[in-house]
Image 1 (tube, helix red, strand yellow):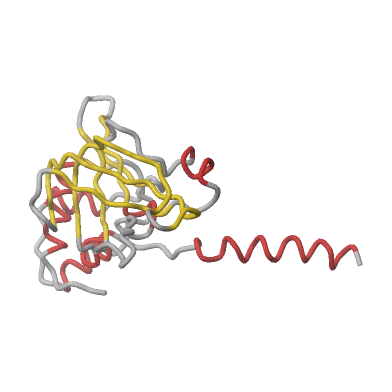
Image 2: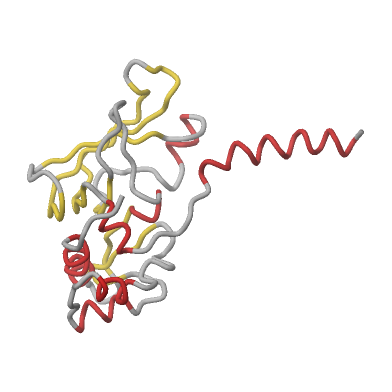
Length: 196
């Protein structure tokens, strides 16, 4: 009886988390699947319910565009992301957006409800910072772990010739990548045939 009660509590909780378990994607897949690849600074992050749906928490994010690697050429870019979980907890989680943050995002086009979120969740959301030497670097929510796996091989098969600096980036196992070399690599990968 006790075992059945424990199972009834554990199983539903694990089923609720199941939709948020994702497979690992590499940079080639991010670059080829993204409809929008944007680098910019967050100038507004407004946490609010989805218009017309008072129980669906979202964040409306506006970026001052520094570089649009793929997508519209506007100076500002705005998207709305669904935030799973209770609105208060979602707001304070590591997926929060803060004014002043510099990000590079891989996004699909918005859904019919006006929602979009980085591909692969934290895998397609990169925070731009400076290393100890003052160089601009970026890393996703997983510290870039697995991000560059097979990228050089896939680029070669897709007909892209990578520079020595780009190849150096693809050799990283984890940790921050140099921003300029990363952006250059993404531009090469995004020019390859797109995948769905």
